[in-house]
Amino acid sequence: MREIEDLTDTRLKAWCIHCGAPIANVESNRDHVPTKALLSKALRKRGAAYDRGSGDELDYLPQVTICKPCNSGFSPDENYLLCVLHAIMAGSLYPDPATHPEAASILRSNRQVVRSLKNGPDGQFLLFDNLQPFTLYPDFDKVRNVIIKNARGHAYHETGEPLLEEPDHVAFTPLDRLNPEQRSGFEAVGFNPELSVWPEVGSRMMVHLLDDKTIVGGWITVEADRYRYSMDWTGAITVKTVIWEYLATETRWER
Image 1: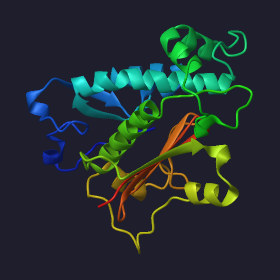
Image 2: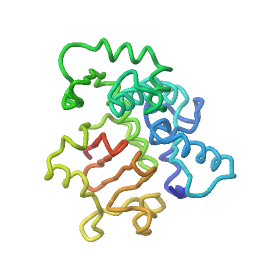
Image 3: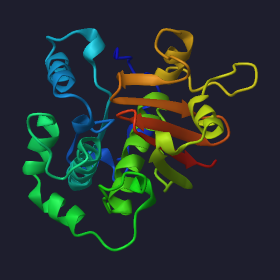
Image 4: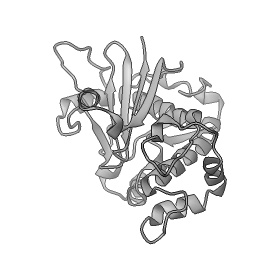
């Protein structure tokens, strides 16, 4: 996706969006939203080249500045979700490298996660209960932490508004578990300028709305078939994401 300069009020950028620490008083660095590991290796490589000033302008990967402790603190849960998704897509905790090379490599390198998934508690977690006979019991809180982290980052990146409080609603489920009516409602996002409140002048979202090429059907695509997200800031702030065209998520902050 193309980089858009953020021209929102710099006073809104004074804190880490996750812990509220004053950025001026702590070590900080750039955090990718979405989690970079959810994107393909090829795009990550092109994005790194763009950051160094040598890549294509369409290879920008969304980033926000947060405190270093928060950035590193999310890594274990991000890695956990990556392993869960690879196992689900491959249908095994021990996928064949010939047919699922990326999944095999990731899961081989994270045996502690594989062991935790293999020895999960009794009771099928609803997120995966339609994938018999292969069954996983992932940690709900770990998955939820990554979803909130990315949603908070998307809101900050697009509207310039930090959301320091906990969200009022977090939900996630496989796309194919939604019935046709639910799927239509989830996918139908957009903006009606006659009925809605416009985002802050200078925000990236304002630019998106004025350029009909950057948003398709209300969705911003970071990488096709890997990650897309949408924003609705009228009334509540709602962030929806679709990961690997498999996992649908919705995070909402009431105003």
